[in-house]
Amino acid sequence: MTKIFSTANNENIKKIIDEDSKKITIFSTSLAPQVLWHYSKSTVAWNFVFCSWQIWIDPDTEELVTWWIEEETRQACRNIRAVLAEHLLWLRNVVKTTIFVSDIKNIDVINTLYKDYFVLKPARTLVEVKSLPKWALIEIEAVAMIK
Image (cartoon, rainbow, N blue to C red):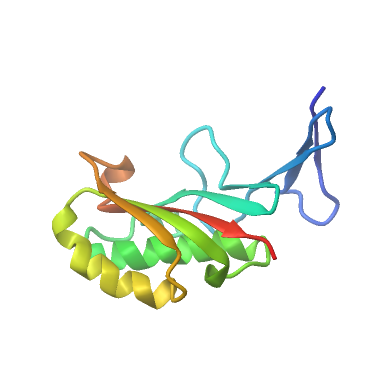
């Protein structure tokens, strides 16, 4: 049987423990935008933090930032950084990112900004898709390692 409970220090954090005593921790933070549908902002399993996709929503206003690829890329990276901060991790802990873009022609701009945030060059997949939630131009998800 799965048990769900809130920790004493942070009511936004829920821990789920399965019957085999293997821990999976589901996190939510006010430092990143609220989730749009049925998923968590991040999940810890084994020694990894799996960050759900982040787009260009400002966590303070829950408003869309702009429709400029430069600012959307920066905001998505800032949102990933905020999710990781809840785990006391940094962008340098990221070992893999997946980037979805609505226009592959933006790759040079994305690469220029991406390297400012992910300086240790984690493994990366970048794919062009037909459309993204909220008409975003870019969406980034990340996997970070807990040391």
